[in-house]
Each structure stands twice: as C-alpha cells, then as structure tokens.
Amino acid sequence: MKTRYIFAALAATLLLAGCFQDVHELDPSRNVGFVAPELSWANPADAGTDIHDLLVVVNSEEGAYSKHYSNVREFAREPLEVPAGESSILFLANAGEADGYQLSGLPATKFTMAEMFLYYPLLSALMGHNCYMGSAEVMVGKNEFEAPIAPLKPVLPRISLSMSNIPERARVSVVLSNAAASVRLNCGSKAGVEPASESLGNIELGDLDKGDIKTLVPPTVDGASTCDMTLSVTMPDGTKTVQLHAPRMDCGGEYSLSLDYKNLIIKMDVGSFIIENWDVEHSYDGRIYE
Image 1 (tube, rainbow, N blue to C red):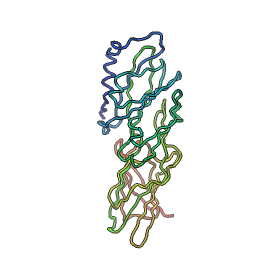
Image 2: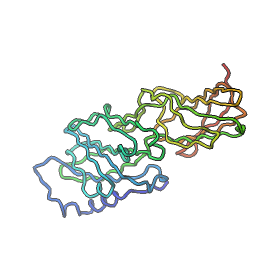
Image 3: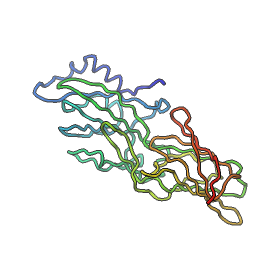
Image 4: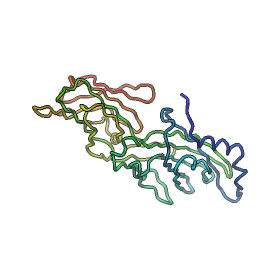
C-alpha cells in the first residue's frame, strides 16, 4: 500500500538536508533538540483531505506545550523545539469548534493524556467533518534533528446502513443507544484514541425507508461488547420495535450493515467479517429468540 505524505514531509526533508542550520543559530547552552514530523495518511483514501486546524502537543518529562496551526504549510515552516531526550508528540487535525468538536483537559503547563477528552456537542455538525489523530515517539539529542513519520487516522467511526424490501407504507427509523459521550486521547508508547465509558444516550440516525443512512457516529462505549440499535417499524396498523446487536464500533472504523425487511424479528444479532484493512461488513446471519 502506497502512503502519501502531506506537505510537511517535504519541509522535513529540506531541513534535514541542511537548510535548518542555514537559518537557525544553534544555542549550545540550551538542552533542546528539534523535530520536523512527516505527517502522512494511514489510509491512502484520505489523501487530499484539507487540514484547516491542527493541534500539536509535545509531552516530555521536562515539560509540555501545545501549539495550534491553521494549516500544514504553517506547521511546516518551523521545526518543533523539544527537550533533549524522549518526547511524545500528538497531532489532532480538524477538531476545532467550527467542525463541531470541543477539547478539554489540556492545561497550559501540564499535560496528562488521561485527562484529555474530545467531545462532539453538535452531532449534526459531524456529518462530513471527521477529525484525525496521529502521534510520534522521538529520542532527540541536544541540538540534533529528527523527522519521525506520524500517520493520521480518523477518530470517529463511519457507518453505512441499508435495508431492502421495505413495504411502500412502512417507516423504519434507526436509533443508536450506546455511543460514547466522548473519546479519550492518549499519547506515549500506547498512543491512540479510546471511547469513554459514559454513554451519550439515544441518537437518531435517520429513516431507512428514505434511503441508505451514511454518517459519522460516536464509537461504542468503552467496555461494551456490542453496538446496540433499535429499529422502529411503523405501519398503518401500529409500530413494532427490533432490538439489533452488532459488533461494537471502534474509533476510526468503517462499518456497513445490510438488512432485509423480510427477515426482521424482535431481536437480531449481527455477525461481521473484515474487508481488506479498512472496512467491516455486517450481515444478519441468524435468528435469536428470547
């Protein structure tokens, strides 16, 4: 699989070639090093995604700081200054308030990843605005230079729902019931993003009788083994509900669920299988009766 690099990779290459020393006077009295991360897309299908907001957090034993950039060109202009030794760097792209996100737990002088959470108070704003996270571990000597590669991965999962053979007068609405209220951002040797254990409550995903549902959703709450949905089937003579349990949806995943109206029963369990490296296909593979 061919990885495409973002503009910052070019800047890092030029700096390593000696341009950095030409425009910066190194101070031997300071115990710092310099890092120009090469941002890339973990999934080449995301290449070309515009980055209009980039948060960078540098964390080390000697201190921490964060910086905001409006785009990758701004980010590429200057290397990051880090304390000499080992540092963890976290990158969070397109997660600003204009995209429907809020960030908490990023103190000005102390950084503890267990305290850093990403919220999505306006779910309607997330329809086409996924954010991306990457990280890098670096060991840099005093006045030395490193260019680690940091692949960016989507934070929220994406789901596609479809249903065949829906009667003309039927309405089929879908509600997701155990989505996480936020995600926890981690930095370090186990860098990544994890769902919180607090549930956001019921989320209306839409009506399948109006067409396929394709949307970003919060991941399944931490500790849950299944992603739980309720299908409300409304006909002229009344409404019936279907409890559907699918494999949990994790951060950054792509999920597809195809159903047949003729197979609907009160309770349904869904199986899954992986398509290549990026998609998870769900299909109803049995009937479970209470």
